[in-house]
Image 1 (tube, helix red, strand yellow):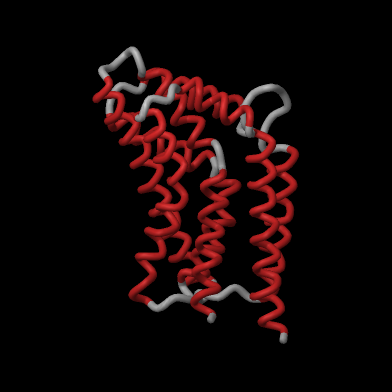
Image 2 (tube, one colour):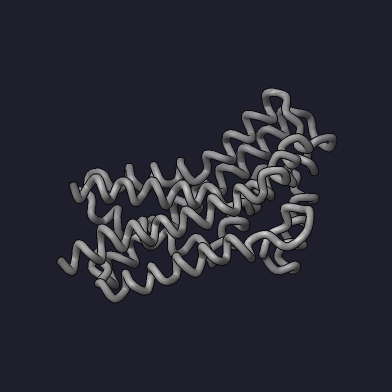
Amino acid sequence: MSELLSIATIILAGLIHASLQLSLGSLLLLYHESTGKHIRTRTRNIVGSFISGVGIITFLLLSTACFIVLNLFHGVFSPEILAIIIGVLAALAIVMWFFYYKIGNSTELWIPKVVARFINNRAKVTKSNTEAFSLGVLTCFAEIPITIILLLITASSILELPVEYRALAVAAYTIVAIIPLVIFRLAIHSGKTVATVQKWRLRNKTFLRFISGLGFLILGLFIFSFKILGVCL
């Protein structure tokens, strides 16, 4: 039963990670800037490198989180640490509902203007696979203030699994986290335009914001129910 709870926690945290919008917004910006400058095959390669950058750095960040949790907390968070984590998740739910998107009829996010401007400029001048890969890495680091708690929770759950399944669990979380990027790449490849995808994001901004915040809240309640109460009983 404990292994099933760990797997459920990993999947839920991965889905919340997948609902975040910075990497997807950067991907669409990269598509927009690359289309017309390069032949279609070149654009696909650049976008593929971007997604690879996001996936690989997510895998490495989660692996690092596992190392930290294993060495600093011996693989298990105490009830006090779990209580702090639940508080952070509740705070992030509020952030997602009220502050993640900036006010206005756009999908502009919370990140500082300096960072947003830098990402925008990098997308405009990206011409090679290496630069696209680096841009993917950058977007992951830019959203660490939100994803770090997800990575730590997931790391703790992964360490509860048998050793032979841990690498697979890290890979599974990574795949879930980048699924939206792959889906939208396939959508554009099948004929959808960047403008169409962006309109969909704008039209569903309220829903996406609600789902993301609800995800953080559900994860907090999940930890409270099965970790805190389980420990205290």
